[in-house]
Image 1: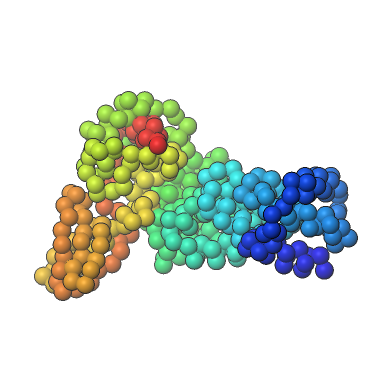
Image 2 (image 1 turned 180 degrees about the vertical axis):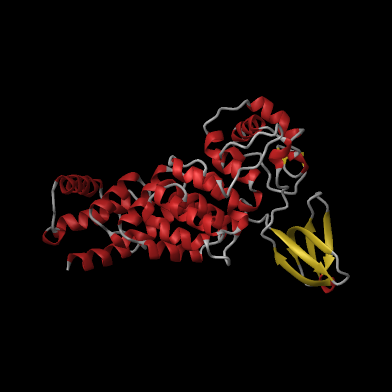
Length: 372
């Protein structure tokens, strides 16, 4: 009885339909005292405490989006809060509160809800939700992650993120290794898999994976360290700025505070948006980290010409496309036989061939300083 009542009330609360009237300071204080008292009780039956039940629901409205909210939802098993937890996990995927929201979802056995949310989201938002799954490093999410890894209809960035997420726990590493050994893992995911498996704490996994996977070689002919190893290093931001503008050729495609060309995203405030791990993925496996609104499109023209670029706009009679050289070209619609979104980024692959591992660490250190 209580569960049904609490579920109904909480759904109304989350929709903003319950306790919408002004609550007095005295009522808030009373609610806070009651909630603290409830937390001290073991095996509390809220069905026998209607006033405490009402106070709890009203109190939850005052602490949405906080650690306390998650603590209360978890403590009283409020499964009606699943939509709110999903939103937190997506919005704050690389923060503690987002990871705790994801862990609570897994505690509730909400894998189907997570999977449904991933299917209905735009790719950029889905990637944020996957970040919380990756950082939770919880084997209970492996089944839905492996489904995503093997789903050829989903975008490569999303599948690569799923590989990274499932590779964060030992059970997931074993599942990935089975795909690698069977030769059924999409080759575009090999870099993500190599980083997950070759950095495993389990020597048997590292050895087995090493028979099938290898990280690319850098400019000094040394194997590239795993991303986790490079994240742990501290670079020289000043040196990274110089490499970014010269050897790295990054300004050929990106702007930083007015300098450079506008092919890919403006990086002027990128340090406020991405973690160091995400920087390395974007640089070393660009097709797995394509930014929203910067997807590459391939156009097949009537004369057999193939044109690749970022689709800026399309109107009735033409497409406006920016090429890798930052040239904006107009393609008449009637000259196009076929066009489609490409899984391959315009950003050049194998940038590590022109840089050493330390160069990469320095560049990432520099990028991390580019904040608002």
